[in-house]
Image (cartoon, rainbow, N blue to C red; front, side):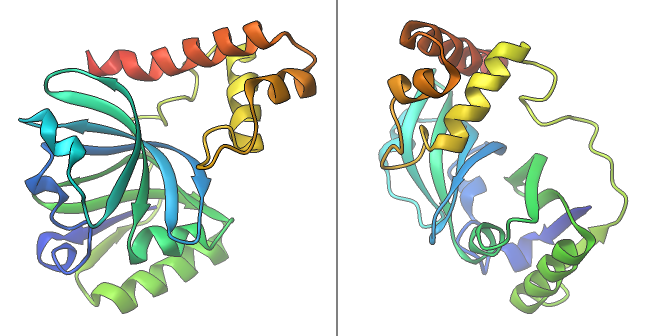
Amino acid sequence: MQLEISTESANELPGGNLHESFHVFEFLTQIGKTEQGMICYLKLEFDNPEILKKQHQAIEILEVKYQTEKSALVIALTKGPIPRIFSENDEVWWISPTFVNHTGMTMTIRGTKKAIREIRDKISKLVGDGFRVKLGFEAIHNPVLMGVLPEKQQIVLDKAIEMGYYSRPRGCTQRDIAKVLDLKQATISEHLQSAESKIINPLG
C-alpha cells in the first residue's frame, strides 16, 4: 500500500517542510527503532552541505556515511508523529520508494492487514482527508538492499542490524558479530564496508 500526504497537510507535520532544505529526501532502509521514531539510512541531496550541520525538527542526523558536494548518505533518527506511529508497530514497515518532496510525503508500506489498517486510521486522525491511499500498489523500485548484496554480505548486515550495531548507542561491536557468526572480525568489517559501499554507489 502507498500513502500520499498532500503538501498542505504535510506542512502541518515536522517533516512536511524537509523539501525546503533537501532537493531529495529519500528513505532507503530502516535499521532500528526508538521511542522517538525510526533510525534509517537516508539519501539526501542539497545545494549547500552546511545544511547537514543544522538542526532539523523532523530528523536528527546521527552519522554521515558518505558525502559529496551535493549529496549524502546518512544514518538519521526520523522523528515526529508519523515515524513514531511506525516505530510502535512491529507488523508494518516502510519500503522504497518513500520520500518527501515539494508535492508532499509519499510512503510505501508493507505489513499485515490489521497493522496497515491501524496505521491508516492513525494517519487519518493526524491529517484528516489530506492523504490518499493506493491499495495493491507494487513498487517499481525494490528496497535498496534487496537483491543487491551477495548472500554473505546480506547475512552479516542483517545480523549487524539485529544486534544493534547501527543503533545509537551501539548495541554491539564487530567482534560481537564475528563471535555470533563464527567469523573473523576482519571478515565482518570487510562485509559491512562492502555492503555500505553498495548503498553509497547510487549517489554517484
